[in-house]
Image (cartoon, rainbow, N blue to C red; front, side):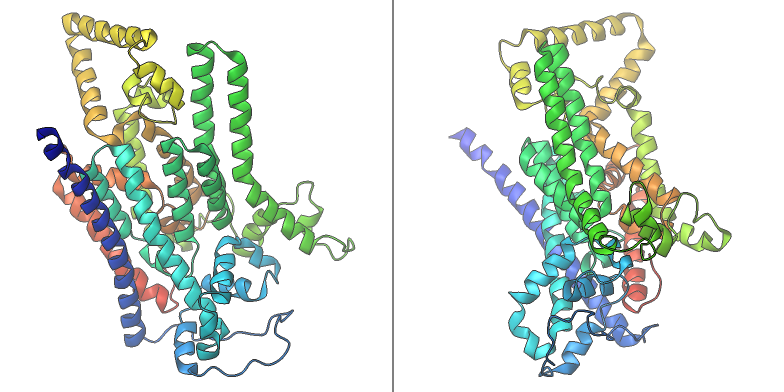
Length: 504
């Protein structure tokens, strides 16, 4: 009876935290909406051409459509279709008409198209088709963000093993500095949902579901293909387990093949979209009509568009006139670099060994390191190998305690960090590698001001920030600075972006 009464409050506290995350996600979306309406009411937009909408090149509606019943309401919705939102809405309405529109992947336009033809179809005579498309985009983005926040919390609980720290990190994600893009008609929300959700399924051991979700993240944003790296990490460790622990080389070969197929599945949607663009633009045309990229040995449409239309390339943004944009991106890049440096300094052996020198206890808690059957084998009562490894580690600690005081202090510090803080656990390593690749790409290759929203879906940023806020080794002022940074960028982003001023 006593056991049952003491076990009941735990699920209740967990449910309360999940509800708090849900409330925070919903409240943050209403906050962004309120700020947007306020700034649009107080200020005049820099560019008033948002409601302009030329007819489609191949109009699916050849006959003139009747005027909407409430054109002013429809116009108010259309005025919010600015920046890249114009492309997403246009693609949902007219398809891929121009070469540069292929820079925007099809998941968000497809969702907008489906919602505008189903759920919100009755509103077309009321506010007009384009306004319905815009409304569908807002609903998709904000709804996807709320779901992404819930998956973020579930993933953080597994990784950090501390519901309170996971709650803090999830609330920070709800109020992240790129929040305006998660409420607008942008692909950030869908990417966050399928990348974070896919990682949750991967950590939980549901590899097939993880493949589907991560492949969908590649349909939302091109950087979704980088999520295949998590399966590369998993395959590497599972193959090691098969070769050196199970002594089964054929099993290791099958693991490598399965891992390669999973990575191919994640790459497949992006590759298929490039083939679709090649077919529409290059197929069936004479050499004189072909674009330059069509004649390349490997015709990569996305790379050509980014380079030709937006000037994206290695070090091409390193110009004096771009210094303000580097300053705009400096907070998120600094946070990313600090988190990586701190992790590397705290767990150098884990980083240099790519996780192979992590403890058995750490490895057994993540499907990234060991398959479920290996975990059961190591944790079972007849696990001789696991017992011998634990005994060897115990003997090693005992020898250090006798004659190596300095090494003992370092070991205790490392053990304390890895045991008490999930951020410094070994299976955060692939998240840090992913963040490092993303940060380097944003700084050296992309338009650097995009880094704020480009990195905003990286869970390790919020885990590190949450760790810094409660760590006894850091000052509380860092926590205040992080929250002030997020609040300032939410205010600044809602002010500038909604009124068609450059932000990121």
